[in-house]
Length: 82
Image 1 (tube, rainbow, N blue to C red):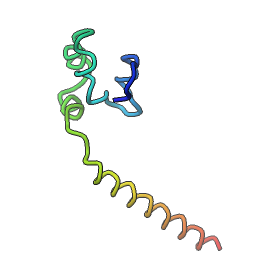
Image 2 (image 1 turned 90 degrees about the vertical axis):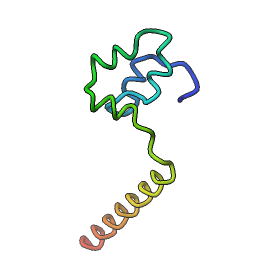
Image 3 (image 1 turned 120 degrees about the vertical axis):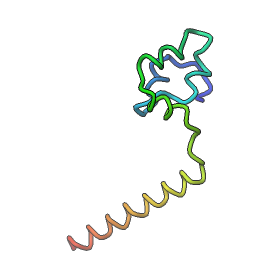
Image 4 (image 1 turned 120 degrees about the horizontal axis):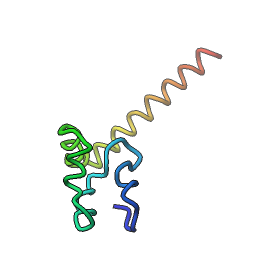
């Protein structure tokens, strides 16, 4: 996903708790990554790893909504103090 080589440790924790969803695609030729994942992760976690990524448009809309909420809360806090 990054376009260059990275260590396996990065793929296991790319700024989130679960491994990158492409972990199987990237590492299958190096070692038995499927057995590794089955050993160290629960069925629910594996399902989450394999779940399709969120739709980009929906993700952007959600980020905008959360930013608007934070801005409104900050404005309310500023008005309460002023």
